[in-house]
Length: 65
Image (cartoon, rainbow, N blue to C red; front, side):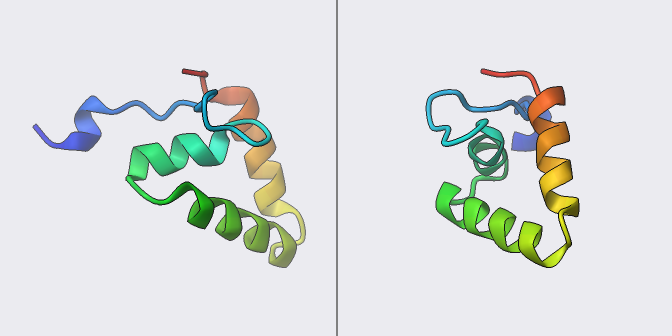
């Protein structure tokens, strides 16, 4: 069984800065949390707020750990 079958995408309340969405995504995809945060901010700036809206939706929809 691969790692993605056992993992759950949840907000990480222990390593959160704002809502824990980036920390949860970094844990799920096994990436550095700072890289995910930087990509989220850059994406929010260059997508005219679409990524920020997706972040807010994920904050509301993702369960917390």
